[in-house]
Image (cartoon, rainbow, N blue to C red; front, side):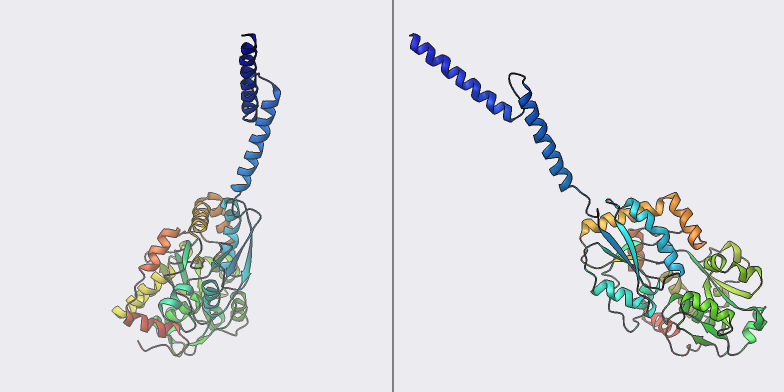
Length: 379
């Protein structure tokens, strides 16, 4: 009997020790000792570190490259510079962001590269002007991208005001004198660039006599060419004229003749007195051409990603764009660098807008001639 009691006592002891060992490994020491708590703390710390590493933001310690379809120092570059600090702020992981410039063919070179060459890994973003849309809709040669397959992140600008100006020394200080002048040399960037298309639109709708279009300049080069007399006139965004060349206005170095409102009915306060180009349109097709141009230009300066970019990375970047465009400090920085107030298009609005651009074959064929390198079509 005593042996039986000892055996029973021993079994209870073994069971208790086993329970203590098991619970100690789980951090639940039955005797309230320190060993179980220490093991639990170490286990919890290791679990927390593992979880932290697993949840590290994708963009942490990475670099995003923004490929710009323009030369450095242009208005579009300043728009990008205004956005970059806020993208870094709102992309989880605070990645480094750098610009790479790829000018040429009115944005076609950069867009083709983004569409066909860039890896869809979320580390390369494109930013090009409205030529991205115009070149595709108009079927310009050299377009190797599908407008409907690109991924859109939004644009900081959509409303835009253009003006047409000439050098004051020409003496074309009235519309009558401008329209009576023959052989006006209108300078521009590359064929397909929105400033080039604007210059052609002004020349065509106004009926400028024997207008000569001289493309191939960078933005700052064109300013210099105008002041040095290489060209007589140019189109320009109203905000950039006020921001970059205020002395032209203050010293009366240029005559500003007319404007284009985008969207229609919205005027730039500095040039609200100017006539609007559509008031010179003489036919319904001319008004339709201007309507198509406004629709194309409202795309602004789109940020794009190549097809195939993972959905989760697209959503991260789109949300960062939304937050950036809504940040009051971004609005201040944009105005400081561009002289204009941002008029953002959010990602979903931009995508819808591009899908709904008018694509009437007859009007597109006419617009193609206006935007191209050949002679302006007859009115």
